[in-house]
Image 1 (cartoon, rainbow, N blue to C red):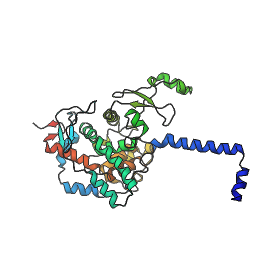
Image 2 (cartoon, one colour; image 1 turned 60 degrees about the horizontal axis):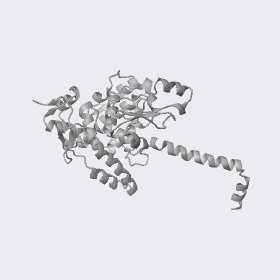
Image 3 (cartoon, one colour; image 1 turned 60 degrees about the vertical axis):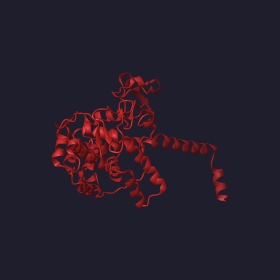
Image 4 (tube, rainbow, N blue to C red; image 1 turned 45 degrees about the vertical axis):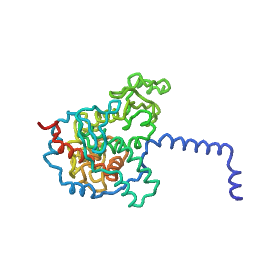
Length: 355
């Protein structure tokens, strides 16, 4: 106690003030950046498992010809997708169009994921946190099914990205803008001039460029205080805008090119990521064996996650691993199989109904 009194007497008012200011700033930083580090407290099983391969073997139904048809055909025949136990949804807004429903019998069950956590000995708090992830999956899987049907982007990848980048729809940005993928609105000419001059207070949202289906721009601190993000009327519009980014025609090997991924790594298979990782190594700086702790042959969804990382989608060094672990933990790969199964069951090819 005497030592504490001596130390207290040595602290000058100026130093005390500095420490208070430091602590205030520290908490401010935590508050500002809390939306940028989602899922750190969410249960994710960080290991490779054989659940995917066992699941594929148990289904014994992924006809290679059907998969080939799915990926080679032009997926322009849009349809409303529903799960077997969910009524046909026609919500207000632009999420879906009620045309020719395709019913999907899904083998994914929330209860199985909960049981996995319970068996692993996770606490009630962790399981409750996982429940928020499961809520997001159930709420947005229909949009992701529709996206895969129309773009070939796997449901598993789309949902994992949405979960990771919006903190399962709970981030401040997602709540304020329906922007679940952190898509920014770039500065227009007048905004760029003000930014160069550091006249940030003079910036207005309408000086930033947004693309349909976005309806505006929103000021939200990310890398810079002047950053603007696109605003959407619905979450479905956010998913559609994300599709535009991931399917834009481009030259594989160039940073920012993602469209090659969805045909390269097809559902239901394992792939060696070495060729594409080697192609992108000059820009990514990541050796093929460094993506997954020495493994280069991985399930298609892990390969797709690595494809996003090597193509420059995210700056986080573990972004691809987080996507992979999310898909593994919550068994999102089942949805990819569910869709292809449904097309077969309904006698529908990737290009539309079989005549």
